[in-house]
Image 1 (tube, rainbow, N blue to C red):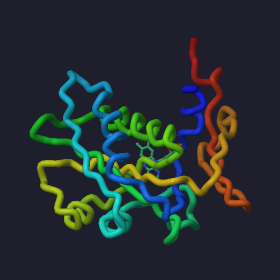
Image 2 (image 1 turned 90 degrees about the vertical axis):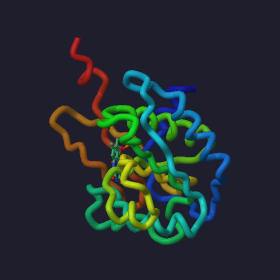
Image 3 (image 1 turned 180 degrees about the vertical axis):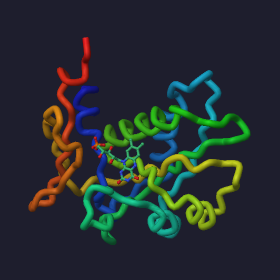
Length: 189
Ligand SMILES: Cc1cc2nc3c(=O)[nH]c(=O)nc-3n(C[C@H](O)[C@H](O)[C@H](O)COP(=O)(O)O)c2cc1C
């Protein structure tokens, strides 16, 4: 069960944009992040939610998608995320935030997957522009944007041979392929 959830918890970047995600769903996902491990249990992360078209359209232009897919500028209109969770670090609680945001993000994405949704961690963000457009106070560091929606693309895992290329690719049918190292190549002993 968990393995299947983890296996299908891929980075999805094309969505059925007309599939709405409501505020309550986003709150349930943040509740999974709330319960995550935190260094020294300081819990410095805060969240901003977006599930409406107007606010979503303020966020989208500040994101960079799939750096390895050079000819793809990101999801087209109609395939964009229907919701976002911004993961922020509260500098009045602690800085740096180190690893907390990664654990929180994974909890949220696993929760999304369980709800038949999917998403992508986006760290390549025009932070200045996003801060300005959403009026995010300087107190909060913008760590990740989690893009969420009902996936409209198929993602397949491939075996990454030692010395092979880590770059993901999209084939002629639009299927996204992601190479992963083999278990025997990552367990050293
Ligand atoms: C810390 C972090 C930052 C990422 N930033 C971006 C990003 O800015 N844009 C993007 O399209 N994908 C981003 N990704 C998604 C990765 O490209 C993705 O995890 C990787 O290609 C492997 O695919 P998988 O998540 O399906 O295993 C990020 C992932 C992580 C963990």
